[in-house]
Amino acid sequence: MQKLMGLLRRCVEDYNMIEEGDRIAVGVSGGKDSLVLLRLLAGLREYHNKHFELEAITIDMGLGMDYSGIKKLCQELNVPYTIVETEIGPIIFDYRKEKNPCSMCAKMRRGALNQALKEHGCNKLALGHHYDDAVETFVMSLLYEGRISCFQPVTNLDRMGVIQIRPMLYITEKSAAHFAEKYELPVISNRCPVDKHTKREEIKNLVYELQGRYPDFKDRVFGAMQRFPLPEWEPHGRYKRPKDSQ
Image (cartoon, rainbow, N blue to C red; front, side, top):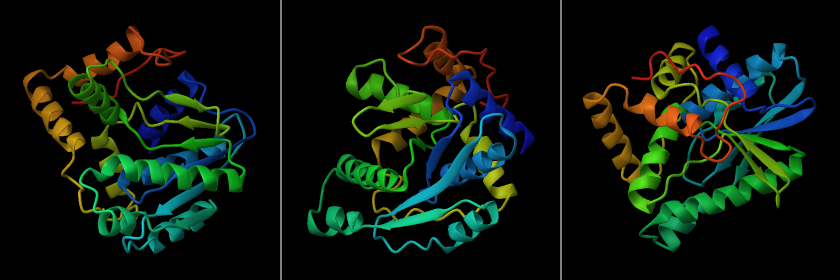
């Protein structure tokens, strides 16, 4: 807890992610990453020098997932929890029978989430992207799009009046998985029909292979995004890489 909390706080401060009076929504999918983020932000809320409010929002895809465990966790953390019911899953897979469903699914989920943020008066949205996600996204953009690009630590969505923040960028997937297991977080199995069969999964396997050949591969990619910064990637502080990033 102390180690991951320190990494999360450092990332928040390096990129000025939280300001006094923020109302932050955590997009909770039910996966380990978003639940770890929720747990850590709830802890940070108790002692951070800038007061902020926190709540959790889940976009129910209509795939029959049970969120009762997450509801109980939110009650224990004293975090308001909202489930937005949709038919996104059936629309994409049953009615439209999309051959490449990920793009449309992401667009529809974003729309539902942005509407929920507006209704709840949240000015920031915290997403559970971690260290490994950033490296994989960089490699995916390079190989599939021919671009040197990645999502930003802080993204200002001017049209929505919302700022996206990614406070777990200094935390590895391995650390997040261990944390979720140790604290028995109510992780829900992903019922998406194309889970583990996407281009991102291919890139994840490629990065794993490259990391095996070149043990500093992920550190070098992540460091390059900060040292020769991509837009908005240069930290205000001095980055300290995760010790278990291999």
